[in-house]
Amino acid sequence: MVILKPPLLILLLTLQFFVYGLVIDRQQQQQQSIHEEKNSRAIMILQALRAARIIPDVLPTSFVPSHSVVLTYPQWHNDVDLGRRLHPKHLQEPPAFVIIPFNSANDTVDKIYTLILTDPDAPSRSNPKWSEICHWIATNITVAGLPEFQDGDMRILGVDLEPTIGQLIDYMPPSPPPNTGFHRYVFVLLEGSIDQVLKAPQERKHWGYGKKRHGVRDWAKDNELKPVGANFFYARNEEYYITN
Image (cartoon, rainbow, N blue to C red; front, side):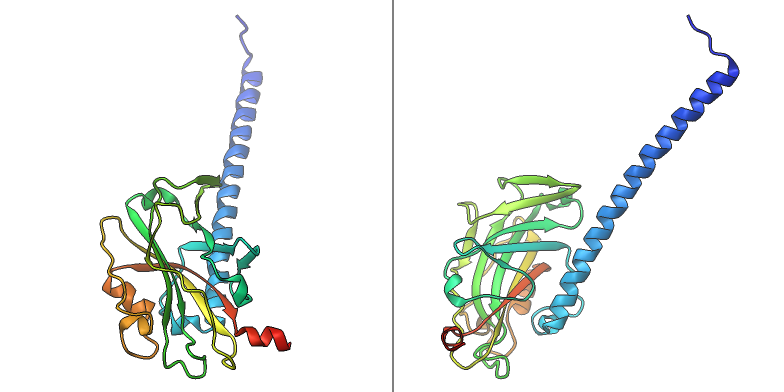
């Protein structure tokens, strides 16, 4: 048996504590980096929504995103990217999407998510007398049974309209009328309890509420759903693309 002399023992213990401190410091730095990245994503989303006046036209001023909603129209490889301009002919089928919680996904197991698409600029942004128009309500989106990928401490849920996903309102492709400029098409992610039964809007125009600028906010409130994420794109009538 080797007996270490006190000076050598002290040196070894000091080295152990030093290495342990480096490991803890690295872990803290990684956690801080992830936290800062999440905050920057949330800030970027809020800034884009406010700049486009989606807050307050569609979402309340109190809205704070807790999820990122990443969408793409796969046939044309067109991503929805916080205000990107997309051609209506590329939007004929529902998009594929992923949901990225900014915080731990452990508290999502008893939640159900609903993704909607709404047009607050019908028939035009300057005259939104038909707004909002409901274009899509996809619901029954849960953590269970969906593909999972690990990214740091964030869970990414891949969703591509599998059989577990229900469409409360079928997808209606965006089709802005001629001479009405660019429309904002807004995806909103709503969170609710897994045992909730949702009621479909009575009609697409005004989401059935019969008043200008009424829509998803009212429907979410009536169904006890909380907005937790959003994304949007711009599109205008195809005549614009033919003449320009």
